[in-house]
Image (cartoon, rainbow, N blue to C red; front, top):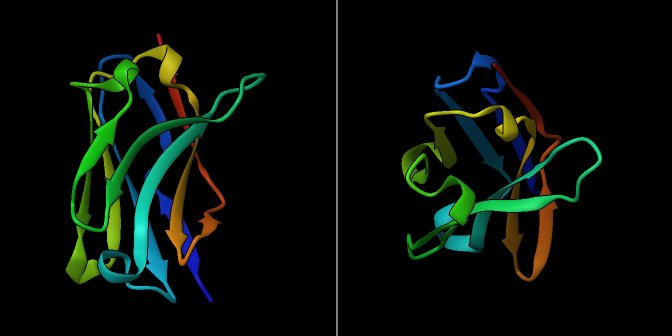
Length: 117
């Protein structure tokens, strides 16, 4: 059974940094997952994709966070990270990790990120 557990969220002042972690079990991300991504959902807004990393290690980051956020993977720890720098109040949201394994999407429970002014 595939499980994804996010951590690392919290309250931070604008301009600060956080690193989110997504630890996977039941799957080897670098081999079995076609892609692993970070999404976020702010109150009253639709869930949006933030960044993805493919099994081959290619990354895509959405324009609104480009230059500030970086997605990476540690194969030994079976973990995907989202390094978030220069955080802005508009980055406030629940951040979710998702992995596509054999064409099925799995989601974590989410971690709250709150950026204060």
